[in-house]
Amino acid sequence: MSLSLIGFITIIVIMALLISGKVTPIVAMVLPPILGALIAGFSFSEVGGFFDSGVSSVINVAIMFIFAIIFFGIMQDVGLFDPIINKLVTLSHGNIITVTVGTVVVAAIAQLDGSGASTFLITIPALLPLYKRLKMSPYLLLLLIAGSASIMNMLPWAGPLGRVASVLEMDVTELWRPLIPIQILGMVLMLVLAVFLGMREKRRIVKAHGSLEAAVALEVEEKDEKHALEKANPHARPKLLWINALLAILVLGVLVYGIIPAGLAFMIGVSIALPINFREVKGQMERLRAHAPNALTMASIILAAGLFLGILNGTGMLEAIANDVVKIMPTAIGPFLHIIVGMLGVPFDLVLSTDAYYFALFPVVDQIAATYGVASISTGYAMIIGNIVGTFVSPLAPAVWLALGLAGLEMGRHLRYSLFLMWGLSIVLVLTAMLIGLI
Image (tube, rainbow, N blue to C red):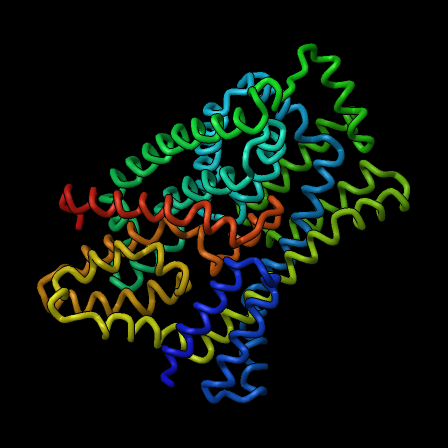
């Protein structure tokens, strides 16, 4: 069996297991790639080397994950987000569409630093309680954040444009400027999608609960709402609200500006938050024990994903897949190859890592398309626009696992909920780029 075929079967098996929901992600991402590597002729010692390489590439994300979940868990325990959520609920008056549109805007602002992980860390802990309060689907929250952040990911300092610019050996800002109209259109379409999905969600809530009022059960008087909140949350620290807010802002500021590693920033944040809010060691340990299971479970999944990526990269399966997928295409479609690959950009996200897509598949597609007179930059735009919308849907993106952990959601259901909507959006953007002559 060829290396690419083994790799493709391995990825299909993993995707099937993840979508089925019959095994944990750890099982899905550990056993199939190891078996695939052994079938391909690699020894256990070589698999061990792939493990070391893969885990080393995600260990910082895993560390950040552990302390980020604990930090935001403590912030939720002490009631930091409660005033924000209460105010948003009051302003929206249970208006589902206002919430969905606001989610897109907030996610776009949070993605300005070009980091999907920080976007999820900023938006999900703040907005998830609001979605739960309004009985809205958390998968809708993840879809809107993922779509908005993906469109904003076309920024010059984000990863995809930097990869393409390096392959084309051109200035990344020069590559980005023609994409601005597509980026603006993408955000407009995300807002339209937010309105449409908000209307759909509103109908679902009314059908399930009889009325929005019955679902939301808003408190009329502020003092009654505050009293109910404090009664429901014994760990709330309203007198320390501004101290906790300042701490959270400082941690996120350090995260955005990259002054120190994200894991260290959250580690320091946890170390400060615990003694400030819980003076006794017993109380501090209780909060750690309360959030440790979720943090460690999702960190273990990230480490398993590291093994998965380490094996697929180390064995050369990803590169072989990228080369063979192009080779089996009929020569008659050569002049349109870059457009076809662009149209399939989101599905490619499910089988290829970002590096494999831009560093392995893109050069091959570019080389073939160039023989038919297609400019390299046109191929680059087709593959960027077609692929980037699916960035935060793919299980190969560590930030997606971070988002799932923060929201307590499943990858399989996220794929079923978001995949085809995001794919449709990417196709519209590719077609628009063709109409305006960018592709």
